[in-house]
Image (tube, rainbow, N blue to C red; front, side, top):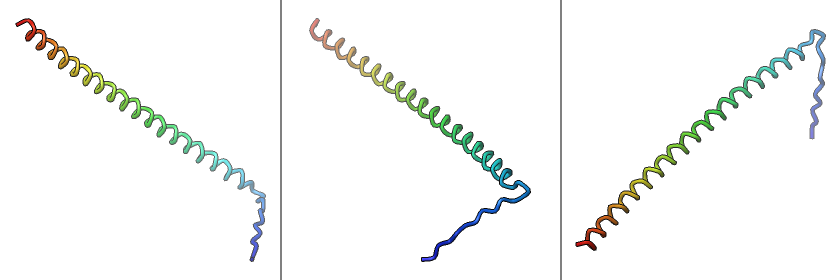
Length: 80
């Protein structure tokens, strides 16, 4: 088995600091992108929940109308 040894040489010009700043900037950008993606997902979820609740409410109202019509029809039959 061959082991590879990596040697880290610190340059005199401070290049590592520049690299560190670049990585920090990339991480900041990625974090902002993820925050935007998460916010959009939350908004989509809220919109879907709102649509679902509206559909449920409409279905309940329709069912109530049908039930009221059936009760009215049975009352007419009894009164005749």
